[in-house]
Length: 33
Length: 156
Image (cartoon, rainbow over all chains, first blue to last red; front, side):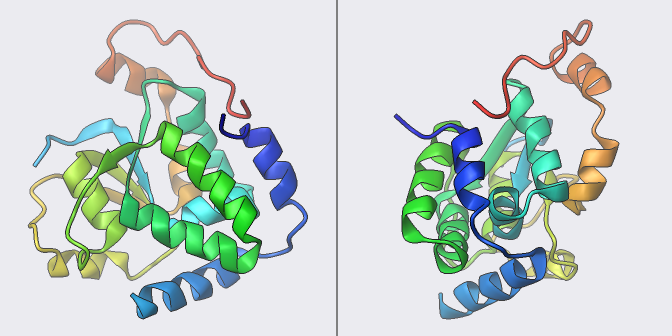
């Protein structure tokens, strides 16, 4: 059974990131494809 | 090619990851989708691969895997060639009228698709989508009749 969104969001709250870091990481991921 | 539906939404990998890891406009936008069973999130495996890799890189692999399992329960799956932009191709192949992204340059990549867009696709930031989302008028256009309100718990 898959996780509840509430539980996923709670676990994700342990990490500090922002949209800019996500954009940079995504560009790296797509550059590696 | 599927006819575009205003109730079908694609979120680029940055928005999917921001929904989980940041919140803000990305979560507000995708909460609109999660609240309504008749609003569909369209995503290819390629698109989910990208988001999962971002989540694993910025958080951890276990969280990314659990997120992948959950999002696969909800998305409408589409397929497209590996060389296409995953978000744009998901939108065109899946007949989505809305594409949410933080990438300001995404519009220009449309010309690189192996399929040519024949549908009207609105490409917006999640914040803009969340601000403009009007479930009552959308429900009337898509389902017909009076909007009954949200029918799902977005945190379930």
